[in-house]
Image 1 (cartoon, rainbow, N blue to C red):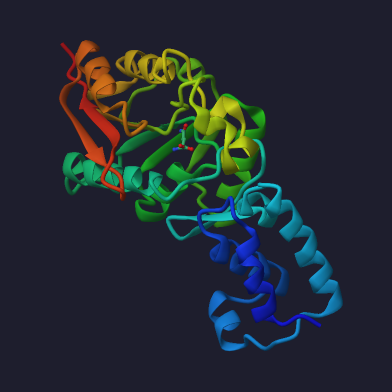
Image 2 (cartoon, rainbow, N blue to C red):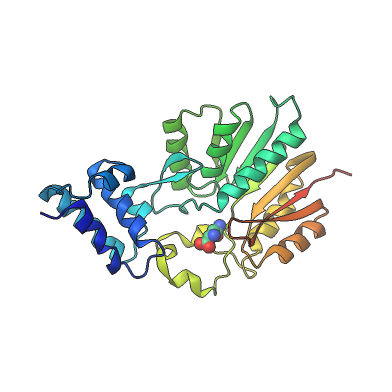
Length: 284
Ligand code: GLN
C-alpha cells in the first residue's frame, strides 16, 4: 500500500500546476478527512485501497487540468468554506483585497452608526464577496445578485450553510431587478478578460464559465456598464469598487472619471499589480 508520503511525491507529475504539492495535499486531505498538519505528522500512514482508488481518480482528473476546487467541491475564501461548482468562478485570493478595501470604505463612510450601511455585490457567483463582508459586518444590509440562476442557487446554499440570514440574494442581470434601490457601496468582481487573451486556453481557467470571465471591449464592457448603471443605485457620497485586470487600471479610471465619479483611485493586489478601482458618486 502507498503511504501519505508516496502519494505526495506524485506532485512531480503535475507539471501544469503552479502549486503541485499543495494540490495533492488538499486532495489527499479531502479523501482522508484529515488536515494538512495531520499529513505532515503521519507521512508513513498507509492509505487504504478504497481511499487510494478515490485519490487516484482525482489525481487523474487533476493531471487533465481540472481545478482542485472542482475536485473537492469547495474553496476557502476569507477563511469561509464555500461550496463551488462549474457554474461560477472559483474565488481567488486576490479578491480578498477587494473585501479589505470594501470594509475600510464602510468603516470610513458609516462612522459609528453602521446599522443602515447598505452594500450591493454585482455578479456574486459563489457569494464570496457578499458573505465575506457579512462575516465581518453582520449589521450591514447586504444584497448580492447574479444573472445566472445556478449561481444564485449556489450563493444561496453558501449563505444558508454559513447562517448569514441577513444577506439577500436574488437573480438580476446587473441592476435589472433593483429598480429604485440605492446603496452606500456597490462592489463587483465582474468578467474582465479580453476574449482574445491566450490565458483563457491554459490551466484551470478552462474549466470555469466564460460568462464569469470574458467581457467585450478588450475586457471593459461590463465594467463600463456597471460604472454607468451604478449612478442610479448609489446614495450621494456612496462608493463603487470593482476588480479588474492588472493592465486595465488606466482604462477603468478613465471610465469612472468619464461617468463623473470623484476620488477615483486604484489599489494593488497581493502581487503588487493594479487590481481594484474605486470612485465616489456625488449626486448633483
Ligand atoms: N482574475 C481572474 C483570472 O485572471 C479573472 C476574474 C474575472 O474575470 N473576474 O483568472
